[in-house]
Length: 329
Image (tube, rainbow, N blue to C red):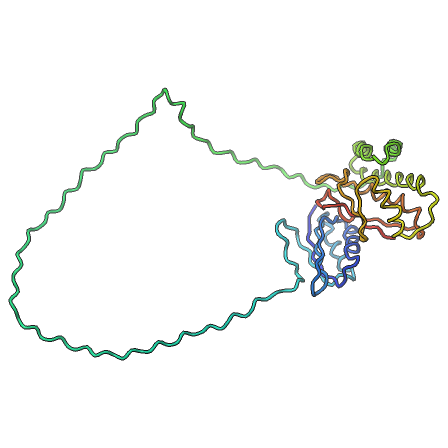
């Protein structure tokens, strides 16, 4: 798996994250972080996505085909301070003030040096010769005093010399193995469904047991099936006689109230934000498939169009703050 940073420039902001998020998910990647900034050139979008390295080209092709994206760059993601956006408006420093040349100092007029006057001869008294000084004799060399040996009775007071710490052993990196998804374990889902309905809305203990009872490759398909059946059961129980609604009304009148009984959720227009999902622990497995299936079974019968599409845009198990589900017809 690799992490990539996508920087893109778009002319409009409304629905941009949902539109690009669908392309990211369809290319095999998961959106982990996102940021939208308004700029005089347009909307600056920065995404951090995670997925298989072999699908990077498919992601770039999907971004090139998106008509809302004017230009983009895809680079490996690096931890640290945010990287400047390639399309952000540049600010330039003011031109430096011209250097002021110092005024030339006045040149002093040359001075005329008078020749020295002749000195009259005079009798100079003779200086008595001084006796030659003898070189001082060097002092005798200092004898090095040997350090006293420690008393054997107090040897235990001496601090032992610390040996250098051993070099840390290298931890082998396990290669990433992409599992091919299997069909859902229908038998395990049928076994868990009565407990889900009996304990509803406290469904997470039964779902966690379901995850443990199936093989890893069938975990997400089994969560999706369990969510579809649970959502259909809730709709038949609480909204069986409801009239057909459009997508916006169905989400606000049926989807958000029903899902709020299970987990903390907020609808912001561009998608459903699920906070602190017990199925999506950080650095763990994503459990968003259950919520996608739950909404499919809950909202599908209530829509007048009869069509529903749900994408897992990002998940807190991959480092995102919240799990976001994009819903469209």
